[in-house]
Image (tube, rainbow, N blue to C red):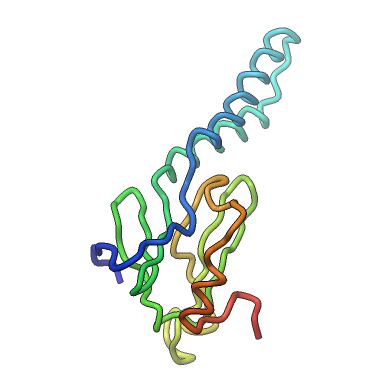
Length: 156
């Protein structure tokens, strides 16, 4: 669903983008490579481009967040808050890490028949989170999966 939604009941933050920590490290690397390049008269352009790409991706995904409420998943991006899936529409769900450079996203396998697009055998990444916003000691997703009768990504 692409319509605008407001949270219903208790709102749980599953993950949200953090811009400044993810800009700081690549920014320092770019500055360090530039200073060393000036001193040694040799610039490693791949490191500069990699750092600039990291900064651009962090800025474009700066407002990304994934929330859960009583009705389902809420995804916030640059366009605002929108509901993505209700709990009874989800077959499987979990975090899909794309590595430190690209962040993480919530992978959802929706319920449906084999001819539905996307169907139960194809995942949909519904919320992209940049940086370390979701890495904390307690991940609320396992409790949500159990409460709503949803399988994890790797459950049989």
